[in-house]
Length: 113
Length: 114
Image (tube, rainbow over all chains, first blue to last red):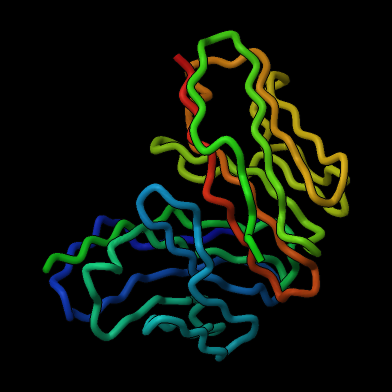
């Protein structure tokens, strides 16, 4: 079945550092890929998405590129802020449908001032 | 749009009591999902509906859990009787088929069973 593997956390960075959170997936066909963010005490928020190979999703300075050849969707940000401290989840859905998402286990990011 | 609305935001109850969690999805969305999140097990899909019909309830932990969606704007998740191991944050999410994927989550209900 489908699966998503994220780098294990926690990740601790200083403000303005470069961020990469790795995500790889296993799925048949051409799934859609997502990054969600969960701030303390809140629900998950859709951060960005990509629906086909080589697409780049971007939002709030974060970006991720759908790499079919490496089955990856790594999240990057050039300069993190304290306010980016949260848990980040990588997820996929089969062929862009609205059906159930398969989530990774989440990566806790802490950014220190 | 107000987003996905869940109530209550916090619920504290005693073991054996019935608990009902409520969800109002985003208007126009035709899929609704219930999730449970704990530190030990992470995010688990419990059940999801399409056009008010339950499609997959294989994640519902046991018969004490039930979910209904009587119309397109309302869903409930009921636990009867509740047990301490049901303590978790329960999320409702909605999406629409033509939206290219991606679900929109509510703020969650934090349930504590004493």
